[in-house]
Amino acid sequence: MVGRGGGDAPQGSNRCRIVGPAVDTGRVGRPHLHFLGHSTVRVELAGHVVLTDPLLTGRVGPLRRVVPVPASETYAGVDLVLLSHLHGDHLHLPSLRLLGPDVRVVAPRGAGAWLRARGLRHVTEVLPGESLTHGALRVTAVPAEHAGHRWGPRLTHGPDTPAVGHLVEGGGRTVYAAGDTDLTDAMDLLGERGVDVALLPVWSWGLTLGPGHLDPAGAAEAVARLRPRVAVPVHWGTLALRGVAHLPRMRRLLTDPPRDFAAAVAARGLDTAVVVAEPGQPVPLPVGTTS
Image (cartoon, rainbow, N blue to C red; front, side, top):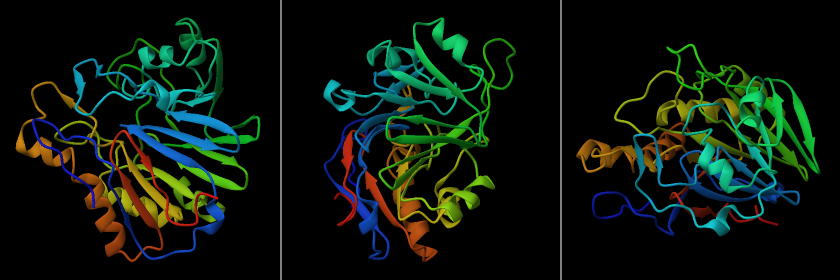
């Protein structure tokens, strides 16, 4: 089961939870996944190392990390970065700089010049529906329902781009990284196309959720639409406002959303295995998915 830590904030654990029927996941094969926290997942697929929305430091503005900072070896060898949108907890410049100026970054169209001006040399821009190839990988941007402005929806300066998710295909396998999003019609289309592993947000970093986010019940509905073989909850248990992490409600929100998501998927009888890994831990896919 999913573990709880002691002290003022939840601690990492080697435990995970797999929930759901004993589905045949044999054709999933690779990827190998490592959940580094928040929306950051290392995906090893078809000979490439992909990192989603890198957040690798101990703080983001007023937010503080409540689990250990990822060790450098967990993001070594990354050759492709996927940015879902421009908010600071998803497009985090100090974390991008840890990966080096030459890593290829895929960003929503309209962010390229802003990123290049800040030292990122290899930026590819995409709109929903556009695809690119990266060696043996094919990456397709898909619609997301979330504000895309760098500084939030009420400000007018800074880049403003559509938020996207990403469908990553390679070696006959597919991984859907949703980024931040509410439910979209595109999820039904992706379900018809076929998804092996879906990385789905189940909360955020605060006491409440604003628009453009999924809570555990919403993420379970996303599973119903996507029909992935495996679902991995992300965007939980990593960040909190300074001085808030010790509050009882916040402590629950740092630990319970993935458990609630798994329970909601199971209650609906969906033919998807849910794998819950703690922030900072590898994601052990069900038997038959790693060869």
